[in-house]
Amino acid sequence: MTNMTFNFNEKAVIVTGGAQGIGFEITRQYLAAGAKVSIWDYSEQALNTAKAELSQYSAQLHVAKVDVGNRESCAQAAASLPWPVDVLINNAGITRDKSFVKMTGEDWDAVISTNLTGLFNVTKALLEKFNPNSTHKRIVNISSVVGLYGNFGQTNYAAAKSGVIGMTKTWAKELGRKGWTVNAIAPGFIMTAMTKAMPKEVLDQMSAKVPVQRLGETSDIANACLYLSSEQASYVNGTVLSVDGGIVL
Ligand SMILES: NC(=O)c1ccc[n+]([C@@H]2O[C@H](COP(=O)([O-])OP(=O)(O)OC[C@H]3O[C@@H](n4cnc5c(N)ncnc54)[C@H](O)[C@@H]3O)[C@@H](O)[C@H]2O)c1
Image 1 (cartoon, rainbow, N blue to C red):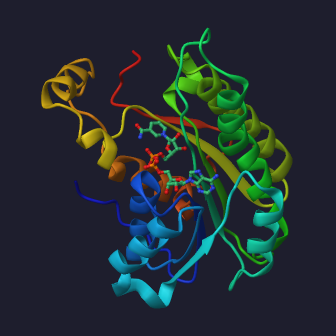
Image 2: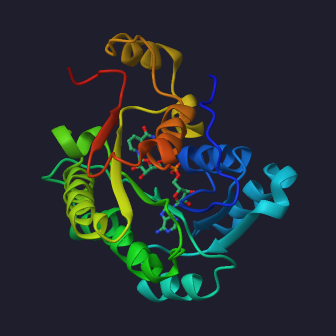
């Protein structure tokens, strides 16, 4: 998959959940486009692996062990940031899937804490850390197609991802006048290490349901992040960009 070319020299980006999966590819693309990137992730092991895999960019890369669901952890990481921020990608997320009948209060709390409250915690901690002179202040929140349409077995996840959309539109209104744009991306089914391990027949059946006849790649989401946070997207604010191959049409 080819990457769009955007120039992020002199820009600083934070990617939550950037140590693995979609967030890792987002991180890689910003580094390749010249940005300094700080990964906030709670998995120390994944952070170490990511650092090793991105060693060619070591001068541009900073990693921090942060639990986005923990307000104090976010505040501490924000206080020790090595540079002012231009772009924030709120990507960290988890699933605890069960039908509503079987879903426990703990399943609900865990997903809401990371996937919804986590965005509040991170963005709140970082708002004052944005570069006040930046003409390029951008927040991109990773929602999901499930936040728009719901999904069997995902009461907690769908509620959180719908909440992300409401939060995005509210911030677009409130922060737009203060120099930010705030947008969301609603990915469809994206291939990550975990999904790549699924049986080929299952993946083929899923691809067949997508109008473009393939599942999404992590680079599809990274491309959308770079676009929405670019100079070129300065008039795009409060939108939800579906990146799903048209699966819900
Ligand atoms: N993969 C898909 O098909 C898909 C589809 C739609 C939306 N999404 C969304 O994209 C985002 C990334 O998903 P992914 O598939 O790459 O997941 P992943 O599990 O591969 O990666 C998630 C990363 O977030 C980190 N993380 C989780 N909880 C955290 C916390 N409390 N604090 C800090 N870091 C935390 C993990 O350590 C991991 O590195 C999520 O928000 C997910 O909901 C994914």
